[in-house]
Image (cartoon, rainbow, N blue to C red; front, side, top):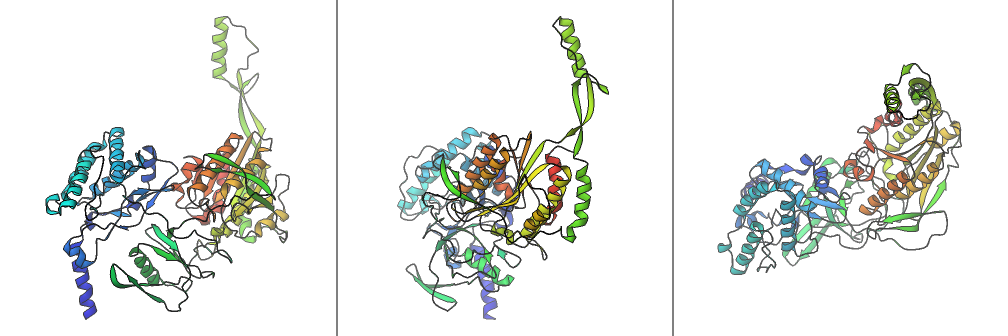
Length: 613
């Protein structure tokens, strides 16, 4: 009974003390499809992704009821770092949903016009506001509406202690007249957070650099993996593994008499209630302390942690194939920065096509055999079945002008033309492909079937094609697997290599694309297609994580295009829209929503890309 009454009291006091308007709440996922487009259209850095940030302690004065309820200590604000624009996971600041949605759009526009990122907090936000309103006059009315609501909710300067009142008056002046305040003198307490501005002190990754596991790399989330439904970027620090066998740790802090936090050991079986409990606990912590016990996990709760990446070394590489890598911070190509090793499966026994794929393969072969020679309409011919009207008009005009005439080609003829095409398919074989997509198949199984059916289809056309796979462990160990070379006939030997595919490690995509481009560029075909099959974004253990890997991959794709190749990406990553437009352009990729359909989608996609019908 006491527990029941306590729960009722907690709900009542929390609901009464809460400043927001839950019924008018707008969540980031509701505008996730337009936020990246809006940000980039306004001139925002195309290399940044947009995702939910995390709440941070603000230290400002709280109302009496908030202190009783134990809420209001933290707030979600917007901020930028090198890789991401962080926005609140949800906004319920204002009483109307339309206003909360407009606040999202305003914050995106403000971030896109962050013209003075190194200035002080108050100057930086004034400069950004000025730049936004100058570039987007249509935002003035929206800003004014948001400003009026914001000022109505802020504390009255006359009711604050003198130093805090002066600080609040300064903030109000900066909001109403951007550019009018050059200096900010803080009061005794930090000011109430300003929802219309970027974060005054953006969170940064703390603690030691992330280190690679000493044993077998951790398996990605499969069918037993719980995930963070809010997809936040969580602040985290790496710590040593606690030696105590107790599942509880008692912590003493100066600001509170005592508090406790549960130590969640994630390599134990977890049910949904445990996952929910751990996620809720994470929401109440400023930092997640992460330790590794060197054991693989049977179950996981998947958080996106803001941990410092392991730094990259500058050792000179001597073995393997040396490849450059693009450093976007230095804006230069680092020569001989990566080492790529060629591999071919030594234990792959030749085998026939698996029985489960034979019916599908037969239909695809029949379809693709008709593409071996395709009819083409040739204009400007001396003879043919139809008149070339453009050529006839041009000929009559030249004849009337008295210009000397060559032998006219006034006809269109339809003939069978041999296809002059080479295709290299590069498959991501990283550890993430070991995840389960349903109760019967993993991602690697789907990729294996896709490559087998792709090979069966292209073998029927006579097109020159090659198949390779890749994974990596830092820049010195990029594993490039030969599955089928251009000079090899598609046979049971190739099928055996494909059937032996296993998940690898990580995804250093730039180096793999550069080497694949070098192989494909040697083909003499008039059309050369580079197909990239992946299930996620570029990443590795070192600084290749995040924007560094994205920008290197983008540069590798640009280099491929400069060689006359046509790169195209096929992915099953549901979040590909956050980064693939920046890498491949709006028309340079396709997302296969149902991974199980990939084996049948890939051959059909090839038909579309090669312009045959």
